[in-house]
Image (spheres, rainbow, N blue to C red):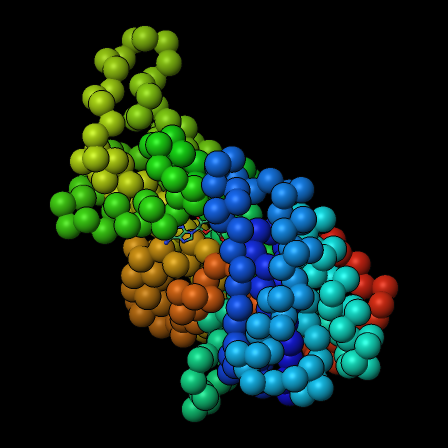
Length: 348
Ligand code: KG4
Ligand code: ZN
């Protein structure tokens, strides 16, 4: 089955053509990062207007790169939730129009579930692609940080999620505090990769919440970063030393250490509680982080899990993950009609 995927939930306009749910024939992403950089975050109205301009060129480019015409597409999948409502509406309207005019099935896909699926995508024909369930799922992105137990691609249960900032959001804010450009995750990752970086220079907090909690909290880590850079309010502590490049590098490494530790801690708790899970699906922009990738690999080896870690190009928002999961949902009999709605919240 050839599925055309469309994604417009935040600041990336994306379209992709995926075969059999796993083989990516094309994946085109028009990023708006430069448009939002001066605001250090996504401005919803600017984002939706840009999607309107980009959506058809991006779909055309995805088809061209796949060497296909619209007539060869068997179904249309669209990320219809969660996200910025004005942004989602652009992709949903385009997908509905295409599905209706081509007389092909339409399926709405949850963006969070699509991130979980992204580790199964391949750029070369896969020898075999079997994912076994039940599985644990970890999504760490700019908007979400959650753990799931998945029975299959249509049934899942949320085990925990962040009670304040998402991890990507915390990365971006930590970078802003250090005077680094937006989005800050990749910048912090690069600084921390310096061989001279000392990840123990700052003892930043790892939130545990309750002894049994599978939730996350990153606001304490963010505040600790703020105090390390600007000093503790109240004037009882010595002011911090100036923010040199060396200090930024050590702060970045220390931040990454605490952030990754928090994720692995809760994954360990989740697996203790659901030992029947033998697979770990991961996804979202922060799974591009080199330290987190290493720690996830070590965790999976240590606990005997099969890890599906997306290749870096499928960690951040893309439409291949939407098309891939859309294919699995269509195989399971899921179909949507012209009444498919854009929804701001996740169903997961
Ligand atoms: O999944 P995504 O593209 O969008 C959402 O669905 O939110 O994730 C974007 C987030 C941003 O916060 C960005 O800073 C973060 O992913 N990110 C990273 C890295 N690359 C992207 N965070 C840490 N390390 C990275 N290498
Ligand atoms: Zn995302």
